[in-house]
Image (cartoon, rainbow, N blue to C red; front, side, top):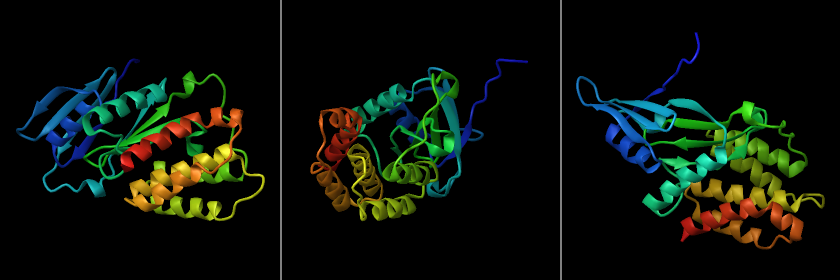
Length: 239
């Protein structure tokens, strides 16, 4: 048989909080009940999610997770980010709920991905569908690129922000002449993002300030443009 559909069923402390948050991301409610047990169904185009409420549930301790495959992670992330900006005035990068940025994942064969961590503590892991990728993604090259790839796996995939911070700080403390300046910018901006996830505004501000002192030529400035957009978002959230 073909054309089967799997719909994740995820736990939460409040289905009302879930409905509010996913409404910001463009989801509509397809089903909701209070008795005999509270649950809700949500839909955004072909993306379906369902949630059930547990009294006394602690989202911080949640292991709820699912994978979403899409042909365009950048477009989906932009739509989610626009909803957050409209509702909250910024993209949420710390606390719960929050959302990470689209980045290549070394532990997913280089496919791009980002995660939404919802009010129930569930990790909605969005990945580029490999079938829609025209060419394989090359492995990261260079000292800083490899460090960044490892940090992304730790923080964005495993949720171990503290260990990701340690390996980034170690690399930044020992600059080398051959370091790619664009990757240096990416590392600093990602370190700022992780600082905000840890509610460390001082370090986030410092990292963004260091970005401004990296000399880039015209080609490098063009390559770094997407990272500068992230930096601008982070700076706005710090105001």
